[in-house]
Amino acid sequence: MHVETTPATTPDEHMLATVHASLEPRGLLPAEHLVDKGSTDSQVLVDSQRTYGVTLIGPGADDPSWQARAGTGFDKAPFLVDWAQQVVTCPMGKQSISWLPHTSPQNGMTWEARFARKDCTPCLHRAQCTRAQKEPRIVGLQAQEHYEALHAASCWASISTYTKKIPRPLCAMCPSPLSCTLYPIISIYPCILAQRRLTR
Figure 1 (tube, one colour):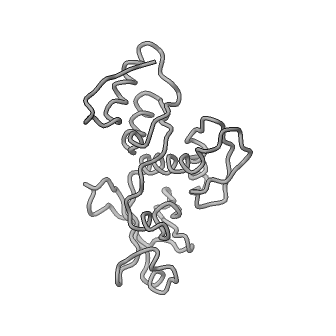
Figure 2: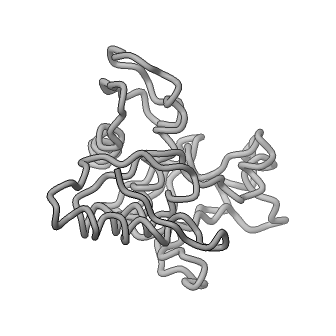
């Protein structure tokens, strides 16, 4: 057991590195660390794995986009990202026509994928996808490692109510009918591997 006491104003994610740094010299680092939503920022997820080899398991932060908040729109979850080809496929099967550095990298986005007007304008689901009057949908993406970490955390949240081994269930957040095998403590890696298989 490790205990750290901090002021109430200290965010949880600021203490994870402190905890892991204390456990490492004693050989007590866990392979997986169960955390709450306050500790699943993409940077924290990546840094924990990269620096200490610890996989953080927990629900991802809520998507702030209007599509996600509306509950009926197309947020980024159902868009399939092909990192190798730098192409994004929308839920209707249309592919992006450009992949460029994001115009506002200070918001955490690294890339933006733009779709074609000829595909977006006549789409029957346009109102669920974008509020732009004329412009097509543009999808902002973090760096690949960060995007995949958040995607995997979202998948974990969608299936975290399972308490026993489940043979080959489908992840509700996955944009493709791939399946994996899950255990009581669910690793984020099956979902990441599935995503990578999709993009090859």
